[in-house]
Length: 375
Image (tube, rainbow, N blue to C red; front, side):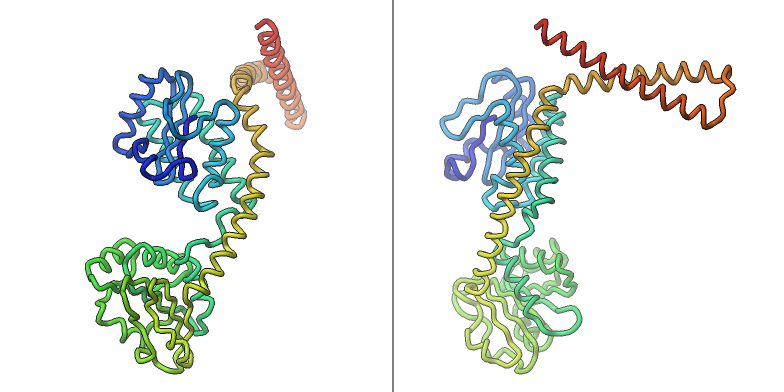
């Protein structure tokens, strides 16, 4: 394994090694040829490029890190679990590694080693993430801002949300509102076409920028401001005193006049308040990451042992299938000659099953052991 990531190289240093999805099949085929590898998989994201190869020469590069054998499997498991991500526990890595695996398959670069490892590595990563709670704590400003805003709203029923802006922060805010069960979400931007695009991708309702102050006065319950404006866009003059309203200001410089917090019924959450929530989320993630890493290291020896001895397990399964076929044939042959009740026949079948399992297990493992001794 060779990998370069955000820790070991800058964006400019990683860029020459990145592999776009449409070029991945040709790149994988070239790696098999140039490195003399029998199998290959490449994971290329904005923060990481990882090559997993079987056989052949190691990939030549002046940057990054190399892992081999058990350490390569361990690092792969840590990557897939999100323990090596810039944002600890981020869930996108699971989808990315599955896509990389599928690209390897489509290019004809996957083989018995990768096919055996990938489902087990993904299964282990999912298990330790679930058990440790890794990935549950919110760590993005937009995510935490929406959570705090919904928590601060004191109204009844389902809130009506207004997002001012159409960039990355606004997009995250819309997704988090949707995930929290908010159904009525309006999005406004100075460039209406941008609001329409965000609405089409998220299901939010685009509205004209000129409508935001009316919506704030009359309709909105929670307003998330993520607009790249050089001045405030919401002030006391735009608010209705006594009406429950939460203003979440994610912008720098701020979109909300601090004086808005003095209006009765209005709660203003700025970046200082949100940053404290982000810090708590990071603390929870770090604690969960430590638990996940410990759980992964505890389970890893079993995964590695089964991988290194997979020929034993495959041989055992094949032998069991053959002996099971013999058992069924012989039982069916002698059954007509036996005057056995259903209960007695059940006992005979159970005994035959146990005998074939024991014979299979002992025979296969004895032959593998003698084979290793002779080698």
